[in-house]
Length: 598
Ligand code: SF4
Image 1 (cartoon, rainbow, N blue to C red):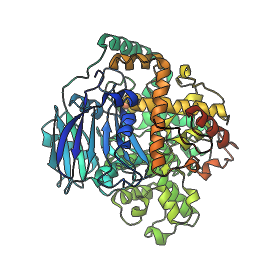
Image 2 (cartoon, rainbow, N blue to C red):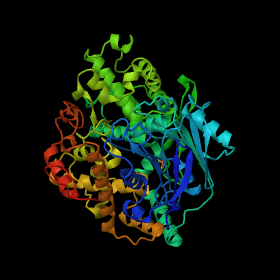
Image 3 (cartoon, rainbow, N blue to C red):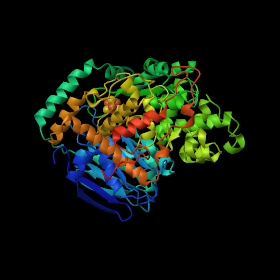
Image 4 (cartoon, rainbow, N blue to C red):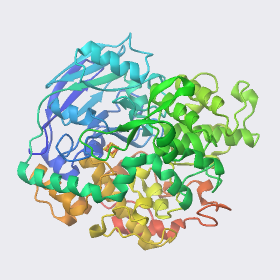
């Protein structure tokens, strides 16, 4: 099999069993890799009753055919399982170096089932895997854990994915952390790992990914790298990180403010990426073989920190604009706390903002919070709440269940800004209405990495050859719904190969790279077929988990027009958007059900 190492590692933590399995070539051809292949594997391993925190929920780490090759920006890893936050399909995708290192250690992926009696960690070195006691590591934060595992392994260059205290405490929004502050953040994969008593996974190896056409691969990589200097989006991300989008997001009304209820706020300009570069940035950082280098190393001297990873745009939005903390250094520190404890910054920020909103409305009182006043803009309280959430201390135990559970607990489920229980990220569907269809149909709940319509309608390298054409961002039409579905399929293919969404060299070059890696001889139209097949499989899995057509919706607050800002008076009309998307996928327009088997 070209483009693959040809095997996956199986680990049963209940028995301590470890064995290799050949990668099923027909499944790889049909679902590619990453979260596509992981979904196909998981589909056969779970049913409607499987407990996401139980031993039967498999935790699947999966690479794809481009990972660990010379392809720029393909150093990624998908971490997948049923989500304890949403109870449906869960996937998260992380950068850094751990994905490539897993392949150098000779594996395409790892499938972990069962539950260890005591805390353990897993080493995978040069094709050999072993479990080790981790009792003394339990309780360490994500940074300390990575360091200690490397020391213990005697491999200073080993790459480590681990959980912090949030994962250990089964916080529903716990992340899996790797390469310092890189995170598989969304859908609570850290809690799945914690429920298995698995503290960390370390990988180290020197194998090479076999390519079908090494010379052809080199040629396309040369072209992509050379052209990157002309790519304005990549250049601006290199300059100011994803945080550089804050100013543009404000202009479009894409940055949610004050729990998605305001379109303008002068404090938001304090969160600008340019300001961050000028005042707090130490240097750029990059994932494996990525010339874009969107990562930031910053500092927060007021908190005694000389090195902090991030923050990204999503973190600035969720822990800044949404909670009205316009103090950049305080937001950097909040992001740092999430990294150390191993928390998804998006779900954490949204849940804390909901707590602020409930307190403002008098729904939440000091009697319920243990005496805390939870006010918008109070950075010190928010920092404290992050720690309480990660450790499930006091009121933090409620926050640890996420927004949907918090809103339901206080009798106001309509105030949860979630889709299928996953908190809405920092892109507002009122600003780019195609996102309404993207979020409503996203297989893991509200997610911008399942179709970035803000990128499409601002012309940031959309795959026009596949019918993803930029247009009016406020047009709620069936055609917009179709385009959103195509972009969702395209990004699901990205999440399978796996390629970073900031690397957009064009359909032809992506196709050339995939063919040179695998030798499959795919044609352009095959890319859409693959992407749609992957989305459809995840949908079938979610239907098995109980989702219906009625769950294809946006939260109420996002259907309320704002009185100011870049979206003033606009909301998505979900009827035509969804009708177009169902038609594009070939799903039943009444039930939203895909026909037959995938
Ligand atoms: S653009 Fe950023 S996230 Fe993407 S691969 Fe490069 S450094 Fe990693």
